[in-house]
Image (cartoon, rainbow, N blue to C red; front, top):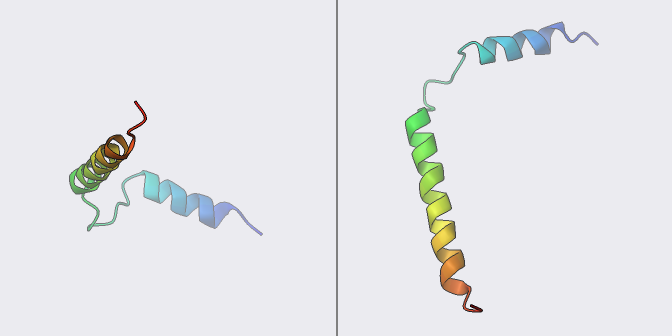
Length: 49
């Protein structure tokens, strides 16, 4: 088994082979909203304090 082909594809991906539909701003914003939602849910249900 040769590691040349997987390594070559990883290098191409790292050099800017991003998929067109993956906008970093939308991805980061979506992750931020999900984390904020989880924070709100966690703090609302934690009535121990």
